[in-house]
Image (cartoon, rainbow, N blue to C red; front, side):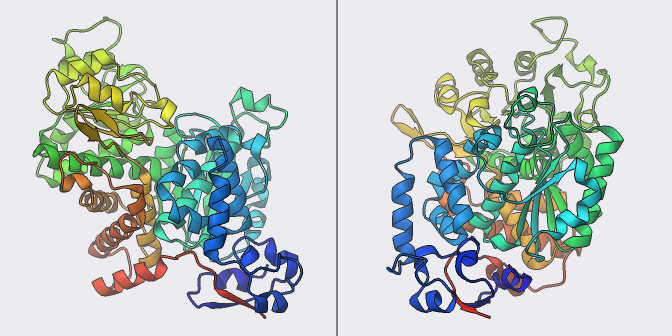
Length: 569
């Protein structure tokens, strides 16, 4: 494949000139049409006799592919089937997804991608993306030079240490960047030829993987400390050399590294961390929609967050920013948030608190009059019993932690409790929506991190919105790529959250979902991109454009999967 072939893929023209011929063309998923190659293309491109004689339409291919998909019984096997299609024919893959968004998004991403990451070394078929291993650190420029397309616009990178709620998955973590970038294309139309998934393989501490004879990663315990930082630094500088115009998204790093790396690099290149900023924005959007339902202000709420990792970091920062915009002093806004981690309540007197936790820590003296279950630690139930939160958010990956007693205690003091069990995959959710609705006599306002079915309660069918980052990060990426944004700021994520909240069905029907349906992802991405671009214009972080020019650039960037005519060089 020549560079000219990959660079021309994003050209909107209906005719593309390519150098590939014959089997090599059929093996290249970004150009392969399979049975849809026309008679002229088969003759001109050396395909005559290599395909069945019937020239199929894209619709015929879709029917045949979906017919097979629905016969596959397990979710993991469906994931493998779709991954195979992506490796064979990307246009057909994305067209199929776009026709069945709600059905297939959970397969290519959460929750099924978690299982795929766990099983990566056992279901591996073909390579996709870059595998940047620590033993190869002296050859970073060589590795990045092997990317066939030099016009990379969106990179998602992970080191596989904190995959969803599943923990360290080593090299299997590559499934997350692959899935995220598929969503960039599906939701925001970012052309797949301009995307690059990367895994930084710095070893794994998952003994099950190290003992697995089929494990495909570097069999070594995780590199830590200065050696780890030097490796990441070298990687970032190599990315800047090879892809200076790319957006770099950090994904599923352990909480300490996630915060550190974001703070280190956020002002050095165009970058963001979706676990922190994306999760914060999508959660804020749901809470703003819930405020519309309740007819209240965010700054009048009491928040308890169970789990204090990267997701909680982002949520807290976005909540404070939103309350400040309502006129609340920042110091006051922080006191309205109570964090609970694996050791209990986060308070100042605890030693070794991370910087983020210190910002939201309360004083122990505030709890002196509390009724506690034990004298050794202040647990989640203690905090709920004494704070009487109006909003309870779970990012702990501890299934069942929002138990009946806890929820009933909360609901006894709040007419419409807002409860977001956000941990995913589904098996890690702090409670199910059905439980939360039942334990609050139908009064709870619920959103979840993983997809759940509607809940029947009395004569109502309650739609459970998914607090899914897919409503934020593709649109942010689209705005950045389309309008040349140089840096990504927290204020851009607040703008994204406001734009998303305005699209909530609950804005028009207080009994409806706090989030749009999955079928509306392209509408959402476009609206988010516009909001992000306008914020970038406001602060001077993008080339000056008129409102009409912003819209035109965003629309022009949104690729729709179709087959162009191919002709030989």
